[in-house]
Length: 288
Image (cartoon, one colour):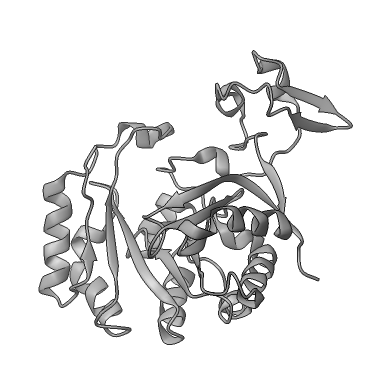
């Protein structure tokens, strides 16, 4: 049975960096990675309803009723006290959207949209909802021109991708490290399934873009440009690549002490990939 509702962290009506054109982006709550450099750690876990954040809220926007934390959005001041006090990397400020709710929102902004993108957290943890929404979009005469994309860490199994590939137009996949041991150190999981996802989506012509986050002294991407290029060119010589530069604004823990990636470091990596045959490479326009 298809899931008829989703736990949503936020909804962004307009974005030009989450796939082609202007897109409505749905950020789903929950993630199966524990990235040391996560800029939104409060999206990692679902609320455990422990109630600890209720007494911390200075505006009394949280209630604890029937063993559940209830967020009163109308009086919330968005001060983030609940986020900073949560020990489980979660947030009580989430929304429950049905498929019909999302469709109504899409139609509200429809004249300005080229497509829909699910992000997170890790969107594929709520795959049945994604499948239901994309299916409805493809069956609706007024919406079927919209492209349907998923921004993912790539850890979904092949069987999972097969459930949505017929209603999905493309996916952006993050490859956070080349060597599995480095990937596990950064995220808590190895990258075998991520590479398998990239290979499978390329095979079925659903891989829109592979993304790299350059973190000086932490990622091994810089030392594996040739290996990365050979891997990707074997799938598609014209594959799209996006290189993002790490910055430590908003991160927590050990990553707060990591140096930001410079424009020079990003350009060196990009040029090495180009030397080994990759051409469609996008780099940041702004460095913080």
